[in-house]
Each structure stands twice: as C-alpha cells, then as structure tokens.
Length: 102
Image (cartoon, rainbow, N blue to C red; front, side, top):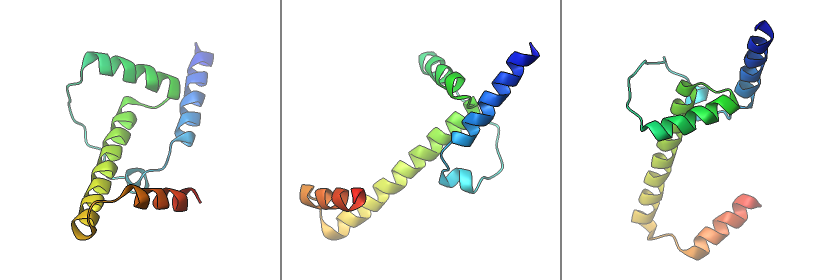
C-alpha cells in the first residue's frame, strides 16, 4: 500500500513539474473555495484526464478558467485592432503566421 502511495505522489510531483506556467500561475492569488455544478459526463471525462496527468481537479479548473480569460483578452485585442484598422485580412494573418513561425 505504501509503495502505491509513493508512486502516486511521485506521479503527481512529475505532473506538477510538467505543467505550463500561465499568467495566473506566475502571480497566484489566494485560493478561494467555491461550489460549482458540472455536467456529469464532462466531470467523468475530466477526472479521467486528471487521473492520467496527476493534476488535481482544482488545478484543472483553474487552468481552464485562466485559459478562457486569456482567450477573452485576446479577443478584446483583436476587436480593438479591427475597430481602428478594419477586419484582419487573410494576407495579414498569413504574414503574422510566417513571422510567428519564423
């Protein structure tokens, strides 16, 4: 039993070391306990994912929420750009991809 617990602890530590650093992770605030309702099928699949990765449900939800905030901030930047310069064209996107992929 102790060996299994040690393997789980080692797996969790290894998974934590592999986690990407996000803006929220770089400047963590105090954790706040909340109660949420989640579709049972979604929760089942998420629990399978976190079991394989060694993450906690709280860490997974926090990362998902942080990702949603990043996407929303990016959408705001795009909207601000397009309000000043017009809709981004396919040519502009292609140039940006070329520069980004360098």
